[in-house]
Length: 420
Ligand code: EPU
Image 1 (cartoon, protein in one colour):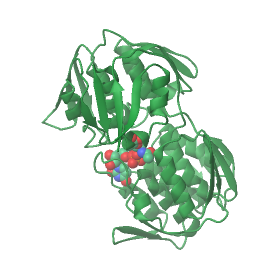
Image 2 (image 1 turned 90 degrees about the horizontal axis):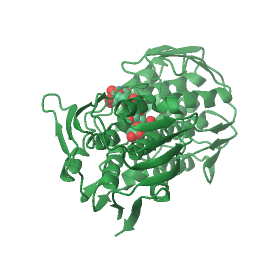
Image 3 (image 1 turned 60 degrees about the vertical axis):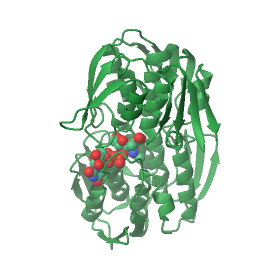
């Protein structure tokens, strides 16, 4: 078993380079299967989720070569093999394979996708999109069996701007006949990244980044070279860490606009942050003002930064409120933060709001990462706590943050992985 051991309260200085976006990479890698030939994807983060995708590609008889930060994918021998539940249950993104295999073979069989246990994560919007294209769906032995004689362009109005359903509809619409319109589409930068790659391959997609995406279907796609955008959630996580411990800490290789909802809040809280074209410099602050945040769809405050941000709010002078509107179960870090000395209460009226009373000193203890961003929240708590913090089940953290131990050690943190 692996533990993360942290000795807290070290000042952090130097530079942290942000890796390629996890949630782009996990969609772009399956999306490549829509094309024929050899595609090179650069800026791939070296995280556990990508290892699972590599295994899935190999299972589909796709040739994969990985070098540092890049992946060469040759789809020439792609086969529509059923993806075993051991692979598909490891990550949410496995349902992108559902869309690409349906688009290529008009038939796919797959189990319900996995992912962090942060609430009910239905896939009804993806299934609704598949049906709108003309597919039929059977559910047998917990497996979805999706068939289509023909996939016809259509108009799909999503009930909510789901990232996954938007990408799945784009993937099918790209190779469907005639025109597709996706209304109430998600606008996340990762969707823009996927569409830009598909267009390089010959797809005809417009309107991405807005709530209406239009697609003119094409018969086939060619290979291309593509660089994944920097990870806005990783950038946000390190910016929060810098707000607590930074001494001219540079967060490098970022797209500032992608984290504006965070940096606007940090500036309002009095954090000293200097934003440049593709990097920012952040300093720790003694007097952090409390603030209220509410998570929502892009470009609003991202749910994926909610848990790391809560740790920061424990150090603000006064009462802050956090409302989580995307997931019902994204507060599993709270009991551990309270064990470390935080004063956080889950509002019992709606169970969606936290009342955080600061400033509370935190002290190191043994805690558990229940999911990826809860793990990031506890890691930040460990970095500011007195004494030693040990985090169990760190695979959740390693699923999403590339070389997190090395990146933090390089700027002065005392953090290491302990094998027991
Ligand atoms: N929803 C439905 N039906 C659907 C799809 C979604 O009700 O068919 C609901 C979900 O239950 C949730 C909300 O809509 O309440 C948003 O879900 P969405 O589909 O947008 O999320 P996702 O595609 O499953 C991606 C990221 C998540 C991130 C969300 C929101 C990937 C692989 N995952 O998930 O990332 O929280 O978008 O931005 O891209 C993470 O990185 O820690 C993570 C959980």
